[in-house]
Length: 152
Image (tube, rainbow, N blue to C red; front, side, top):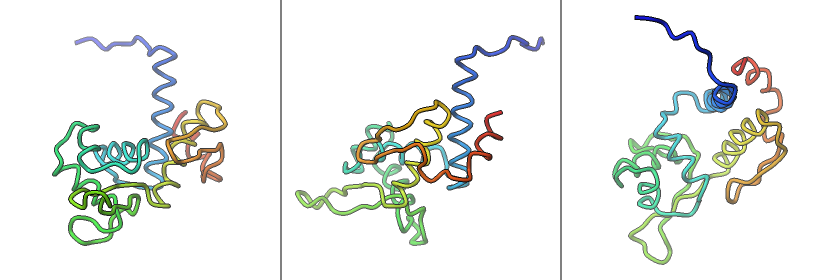
């Protein structure tokens, strides 16, 4: 078996560095957060105020697994223990059979940190994840050393 010694393209290297920066932020602020939870969180951050079934459809999973993930990302997890505190949910005022999910204040700050890491890597200065304003310095003061270390 031969070892592939061909290096990655500059574009692929850039994406890998960006991903390392994002995962560095995830690990700094929410260690041990499973990938499926990250995907669920990002779905809510991208389009807050939807129902559990809307997010399940977007993520390509069933309503049951998505409900568990969103509950665990909230104040209290499915075992009635403290959750991650990143999401808030409430009954839909138009149809109480459904639950509306949005980012908590902690979740908004976490979304800004992720976006800031992406912008920091790309040299950007602002942007929006629907409903969450993003700036160049969204809570990452003092964290650039860790991000630099992870992306070298």
